[in-house]
Amino acid sequence: FFSFFFPPPPGGATPVPPARQRRERTARRALAARGMVEAVNWSFISAREADLFGGGNATPALKLANPISAEMSHMRPSLLAGLIAAAGRNMARGQADIAMFEVGQQFESDEPSGQVLAATGLRRGTARPHGSGRHWQGKAGPVEAMDAKDDAVALLSALGAPVASFQIAADAPSWYHPGRSGVFRLGPKNVIGYFGELHPRVLDEMDVAGPIVAFEIFPDAIPEPKRKPTRAKPPLDMSDLQPLRRDFAFVVAESVTADQLMRAARGAEKKLIADVSLFDVFEGGSLGEGQKSLAIEVTLQPVEKTLTDEEIEAVSKRIVAAVEKATGGTLRS
Image (cartoon, rainbow, N blue to C red; front, side, top):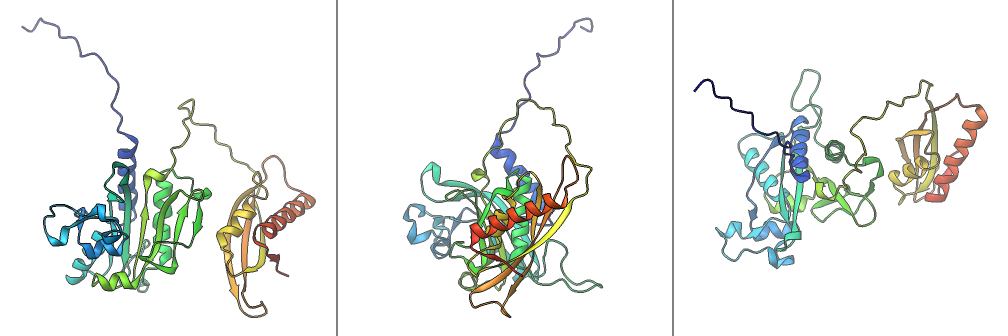
């Protein structure tokens, strides 16, 4: 018996999980790394909760023919319904600082295309991304809408999304607080996700004390990156020249968003502009009614040689011209 030779089984291709499954795993790991706890909730909610998130009477197809109970009569149009209810149960047990997420399916219709993968999270109390609760250095402040945006951007970056190409608009769904929320878009119709503070009306209806900030990201809406012809990583291309930073302040109408202004500045000189960031917003004072001042810092990264004063001035003029054309604003003197 021991003299028999058993050849090894023929080698086969290593199974690779589907793209959606890889994105689900990536989303869970990214959010857990930000200190959030994963929750697993029912896919069924009550008609009252479904109404709050665009389902219920607005989408009769989501109503179940034979529900388990009256409180589970509809397919969930948003994962937020279960997360908010879970937050309320935690608060009833003395846990007021909450950071949790869920990755799962939500439903827009009873068609196969109406089943949408979502990565959704919320924060409450002092459960901020960079520490929570009491500390000898001082108590952490309450969560803010920008905390939800930070979570969403971190998740999108982990999923390989082109974050710098996104447009941010203020037309978030009705369950978000107007003026304290936003929408990520890639083009006019492709909605990538939402973020912001939840509307107090929704929290009152669910008998949960706020404020609560949340985000909803739809991984399937993120375009797949273009396949590279080779697996070899491209050579690291870094300049050894010192970057330059220039500040610009523009007077614009109140309706102009910082994102519009920064996108215009970034597009003025794509080869040299490495980064554009907002560092000041000013209203009132000597500015006219309906106007505000937005100040940005532009980082120029020379590649081949040190820029001369004339070249820097030329880039600055192109930035000013691009912003004025896109926003109708003027350089603040």
